Length: 149
Image (cartoon, rainbow, N blue to C red):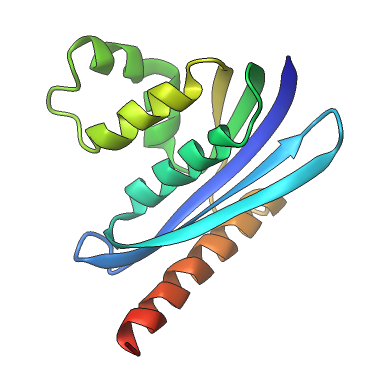
């Protein structure tokens, strides 16, 4: 069983109003001490969707099965993963936003042991800060591509 840390962040310009978003996941293999960066962008999205996509894309790069510590500066997502998700799933996600992404998360997470850990944003955590900068850059690049046609 592998042992991994995944740092994630999402960004969205004009959040919730047809914004352009970016995401980043840094996946660290603790046994080989190697890391990979997964990044991307989407139009018409929100910050939370970008953070969730970073988590899903990061987990998808980890071999099955593995132990994963997932670091996020989004307390809601950390609480959802650690505490609320089983209850939401049992109630068929009634009243929960972003069901499509939660279902993708459950599928990606199934073979793994995952513990989500909250890190305070913009507080000097090197990998969280790096993810933030990459996600913001991805959102900005997409915004400029769309703006400039």
